[in-house]
Length: 237
Image (cartoon, rainbow, N blue to C red; front, top):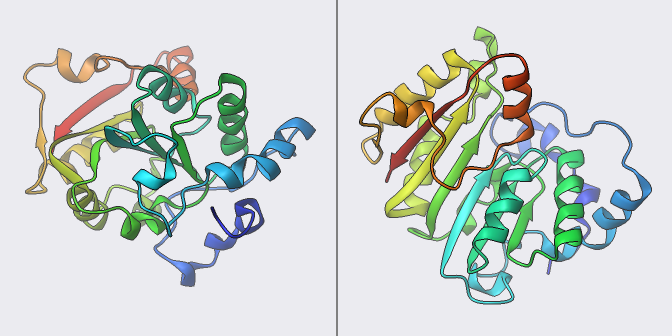
């Protein structure tokens, strides 16, 4: 288990010397409710991804596969996927502590056993994930960083794609979704130009329709309220 409470280190990646340029915004929102704050203090350390242990050792039962969700927001999609696939081990990364607290609360309420959380920049755990270990990766509604001066903060870069290509096995799927049209065009170009990924779409319905087993996230719901439809890109490693 982690040697210290991860919430105590929740703001360390604000220091650029600790790693890559951060691809996310704020780390904290409103003060956590007492119940969620208690769960962050007591439950989160036990279910935090441990870089010192193998993937199989981190789950109560040996998983048949490992799936990764990068930037899980409030954890709606991740929790539903974990409940639908109890034999699969899930790793969820999210630097926003309020979103982490919401997922930890769901894990506690639903008795979910197959999720491990990285409450920080996902790239910090990439070296701990073995080659070909991942069967599916989700990047859902990432921060689009629309201003030109912020493009360097976008998560989907050549370096990220190289890392994912190493960690994903041949035939694994990468699912990217966004309601931001320019970001989707940019992400499609970045990923489709990478030699290890192929876009699976055969017609327009393939990117206009959510993939099988889809769980609507709060970000997607907000977009729908605004009358904005999302785009769903599925790639194969």
